[in-house]
Image 1 (spheres, rainbow, N blue to C red):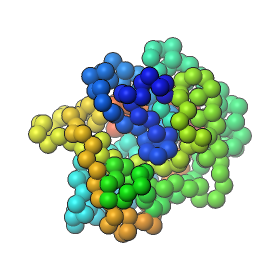
Image 2: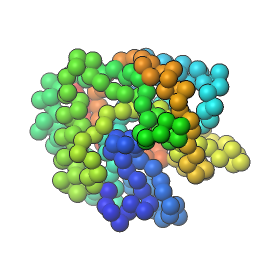
Image 3: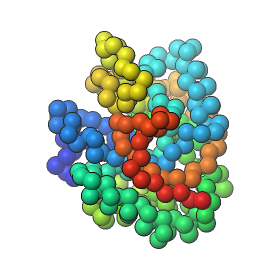
Image 4: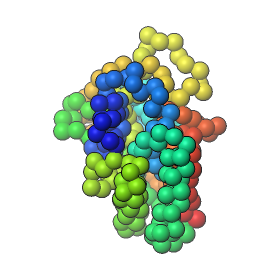
Length: 255
């Protein structure tokens, strides 16, 4: 994203490391922009991955010193390709049209009109110190060992940065699914919000890192399962549709 916005937003194209996004100082400046802050994302909220992810969460009932509020909402599990700043309806339209153009130019050829089957296996973190972790993510790989998903993600990154709708911070997308993020930590002094309130609009504390050494040791090769990826969305952050996933401004299908 543009340098002048960096004091308000962080967009790490590997979630965290390659594309996680977060908030920094200057919160009062976020209000008018966040409604237009969107992500190109792949939804992965169906099938065994969600069920196993819920089992993964339950394992922490045994006490790993982890605050449950930092877990990703299961309905919002996804792969982030990049973050966009769309300042008006014209930008949203441009983003959706560009996504469709990418489908026609190279995505259809790579997918051959079929969903992509991926495996979610193992956990990793984004910083250098496992005792001070802010983001823990599930590692992603194509089941058949090809690089099709990586090529699609990197191709989208190239096209959207060239269009000016996305800032370049990394050479390639790091494929991952965020499982825990300390930005999700709830302020327990504030009354619970209505279930329809977007997660990002809850009051939150400043980042408070957690010690992930035991988690990494136990779940390093944890198999979350396989999932078919069949869509790419331009998803609105801090929003939710009737299914609980992010509201979508536009999308494409592989099949």
